[in-house]
Length: 178
Image 1 (cartoon, rainbow, N blue to C red):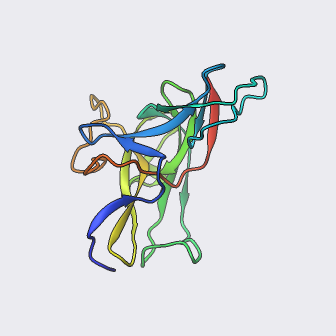
Image 2 (cartoon, rainbow, N blue to C red):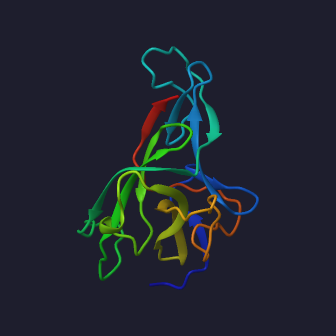
């Protein structure tokens, strides 16, 4: 594995960081009906009852309740990067606190399905997905179990972004009306 020279998002535009380096998801919201969308997009409100065509970029909640989860026990096939040896990891579907939108993402290393329970508080973080052949660590968003009294502040270096770049994770799309 090449030595890490710097970090960049794996997918541009799905998350960003505030001035303190705390990550937040970037979504879209229809100004006509209030429907939220993730990943973000510029147009076409997904609400079939709305004729809105323009969507606004918005920062989404950084916390939510665990809605569902599973554990991936198999390495992805090529061409997808995978550590060697492969380590199982949990995937969480988190219902965002303010928007009600459900966002899927990887759970931090060291947390498996046995550690999770539907309804627990989760918080957004970032983590490396892989390091490419040029030494660029590709960063994605993910979820971790929220700590009591921790208002989404990163600790132990997990979740802190080193600079203010927009980043994107390997989550599935979702949309929800508020």
